[in-house]
Image (cartoon, rainbow over all chains, first blue to last red; front, side):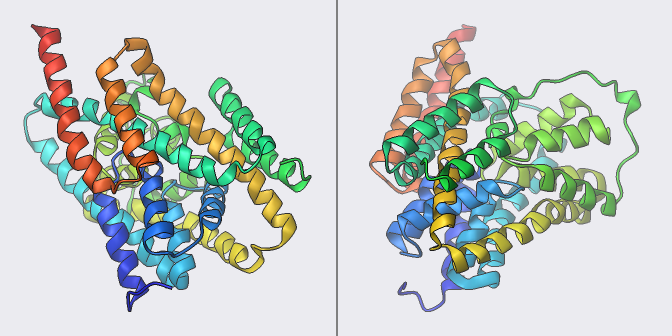
Length: 177
Length: 203
C-alpha cells in the first residue's frame, strides 16, 4: 500500500510533525490529515476518511481521536496507540514547558498578540476542514440539505451535538439521505 | 467540537477563590478527566470546564480561561494540552501524565472498538447508510462551529482578519497546499498585521 518499509514509523513521523503544526486543534488539522492519509500515503479512500471522521465524532472524547482511527486502519491497535501518542505528546510536552516558563516570566503583550493573530488562521483551517469532509459526505441533494439543517440547528440551539448525529444516523438508516 | 472554539466563548460565572477545594490527588486527576472525556460528545472543553470549575472547584473560572487560552494558542489538540498543563500544575509531571491518560485512554478504547467494528462491517449496506447520515450531522456541526468562531470577526468588521482567514481557507481547502508551507507564510503575516493594527489602535 505504501512504499515505506515500516508503516508504524510513517505514522509516528506524520503525526508527530503534524502535532507541532496543528494550529487551532485537531479539527483544524483535518485537511492535512486527509491530504496525507488519502492523497500522499494512500492509507485509505476519500469515503473511508469521511466514515472515520463520522465515527470519531460519534464517540466520546477529544476530537483528536480521529488520529487513533487512522492509526488503527494502518497498523491495528499498535498503530492506533502510536499515532495517538505521536499526535499528543510533542505538543503536550511543549504546553508543559511553556506553561512553566510563563508562570515564572513577567507577562508581556506578545502572548496576547500571537493568540489574536492565530484566531483567523484557525477559522480558515476549520472552514477548509468543513469543505473537505462535506465534499466526501454530501454526495446528493438530500445529504447536502441534511448537512445544512444540522448546521443551522447546531448554530441556533444548545442541543447536545450527539442528538444531531443520532438523528442523522436514523435518517441515513431510513434511506432518506 | 463547537465547544473547542476560542476561549472567549466560555462565559465566566464568578466563583470566589475562597471556595476552592484542595488540590486533587493523582488518582483523582485521572478519574476526573476520564469522566469528563467519556461525557464529552462533540468536544470535551465544555465538560472539562464544568468538571474543573463548577463540580470539583479546583480552579476559578478566570484561572480556567487563562489556562485554556494558553492551550488554544499552542499547536495540537487543545484539550489534550489543557489536561497536561492542568494536571502538572497540581501534581507535577506525574499529575500531567495522569490527567492526559484519563482524558485520552478510556475514549481511545471506545473509538478503537468502533473502528474495529467498522473495518469488519464497513461494507454492510445498513451501516453504510447510517454512517452517511452521521457524516451529514458531523459536517453540519463543524460548519456551525466555524460560523460561531467567525461571528466576533464579523461584529468587529475585522477586514484584515477576514482576508487572512479566506487566504488560509483557499490555500488549504481549495489549493490543497501542505500545512507547514501555508503556516510558514500565514503566521508571520498575521502576527505582523495584528501588531500593526494594535499599534494604530493605541496611537
